[in-house]
Image (cartoon, rainbow, N blue to C red; front, side, top):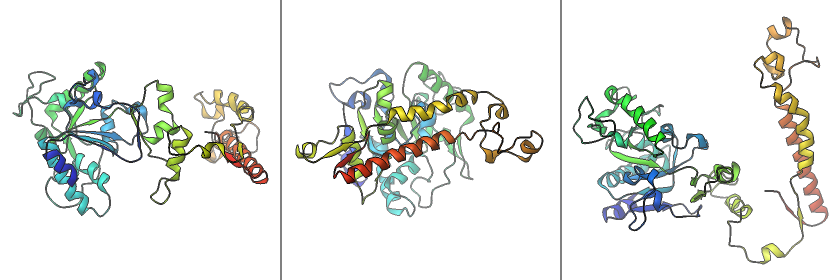
Length: 369
């Protein structure tokens, strides 16, 4: 944060990228402010933000929704625009990061933006209560507070006043502004615009980088959002990865290898050695799953007893006594986890067989991606 302060004070905009971020494309049409590069129409408000940051949220349906601002922000992909607000923010960030006893720099970044500290005063953060306040950037016009806004998009208001925290620590939005706030969110969503928000007690403008283009590790490697969304990624951050610790970084490296993104190996890595490739056993998987397809269809019905989709441990005494349902009865409710457990057991067996064969044949086992 101290280095950021120096750069921002010198007039530089700063794009921060963790070492485990892979870049595929150009972020400037979304970030904005780059001479000669036009800003995308949907990023009109993002271009005005002091801070743009990625999110750890793994629910893609939250993308573009105002509630996404309440999720954990990840500073591995972070942009700060040189402004008075961003400089003051880095000063506060330095103090909180040095003083914290139960977090780290990213923890404090989130706490400050959420308004969990009294600005400039030492002390512990307020309890993180949701929802917490935020205003769409477009709701704010000049800084003179009035109770009757002249128009929806140019409300004359003071964000620091409209975003208030009551003495007991609860967050709140001024009642005069609340209805206009949600109306603005709805209006911009219908127009395909991405909102930026007033955070840190209304002192700074913050926008979120689009989830489908600035992906966290879960969305890219596990859910493979880029494949079914059809949206070309700009960057991916290797979060949510196995072996994701300071002492064991090979999990991230292997993820990159699996997707052809690790280019540091020499030719011998791919050509020398004896290998045994374990492919995904599609036919066996299908054989097991088909047994449960009929049950899965019935489980969509509304009557839980009729559909027989209750886990046996969920049966009450009333079910057993009054409805005469026996755990040993072939008509008893079916454990909905049974199909998953059977498939997982079968896959573990295939993996076991592959390991045994590889060891006996003195080969390197290659797992399916």
